[in-house]
Length: 157
Image 1 (cartoon, rainbow, N blue to C red):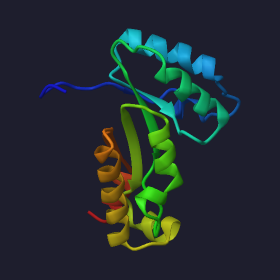
Image 2 (cartoon, one colour; image 1 turned 90 degrees about the vertical axis):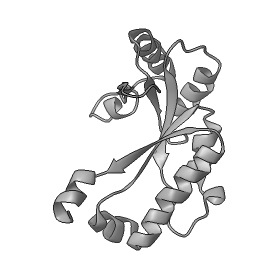
Image 3 (cartoon, helix red, strand yellow; image 1 turned 30 degrees about the vertical axis):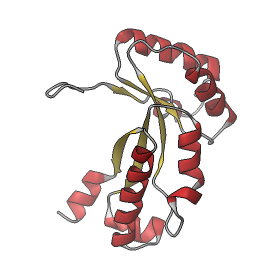
Image 4 (cartoon, helix red, strand yellow; image 1 turned 90 degrees about the horizontal axis):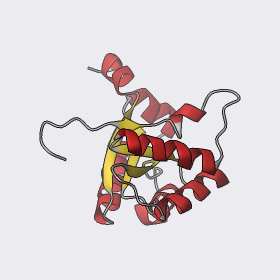
């Protein structure tokens, strides 16, 4: 991306479906993605590969389409604590999605690292670094999503 350019990243196909009573078929997602591509979005987050059959179908169909502008992006987490990147099912599914880009979230609040992941801060940093390096090494553009960054900053500036 050119220096000074702002990229537009859309999460409608994943985050937009998290409300009660909202569901999209793979075909619905493809139609929405086509419109977002026409609007000029740089990235369209297609969902979390492997989380449900609709997302698997969406990624399979999205791979066979020509996108004029957008880069279809797979969403997922960093590797799990104590699991190598090569053995992590989530990272495998991101790669299997066949997208040019991945958005990978990791814990950015020390409370969540200790309580939710039940791991050390150092291991959390290794999880982030290993995951980003692994996906980049396989040709993906990686966008890191610092989950709960501002909560972490507020608690531990």
